[in-house]
View 1 (cartoon, rainbow, N blue to C red):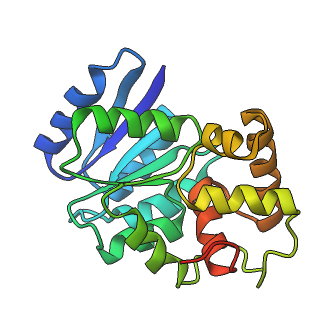
View 2 (cartoon, one colour; view 1 turned 135 degrees about the vertical axis):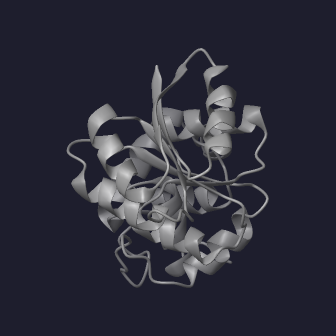
Length: 218
């Protein structure tokens, strides 16, 4: 069962997301609150796998809450899914820099929200397909807090470089495996080693690093 916490200052949004998510038999909403500081305490109490986090809340923003949640986490931290009404809001970039693993718009369809939560719970990052290229292009030009800037991709093997380039094109492990004629488990292993080498925590940050270091072309 995937445990989810909802953080949004609008009750109607939280209620709507709860209904959308609990239709799925593998997702349980284990808590909700209306501001960032409350979210930090909520996560410590209920230990969710995924947090659906609004970014603009009068009682305390989701950006600071994301940083605090990830900094305080013991063991595996929850995946933070940023939910916003703005596709290029400055808060989105700040949230990704703070360590959020996903980004979707508030008008997301119910099935897509469920899929996003499942994806993050399984360790994959996600950015809304409507804005993926623009977000990555802009974010790649910045200096993310959590990405180690190596200056080049020289520390990767040829196979690792090929895999990262395909990842940057938006391919899944299975698609990468088919392209390179290897097993999907091999792709997963290579990506794990890549993330360790470059000092990132998920696939999205790996893509950002690839663009910034010339491994993938904008």
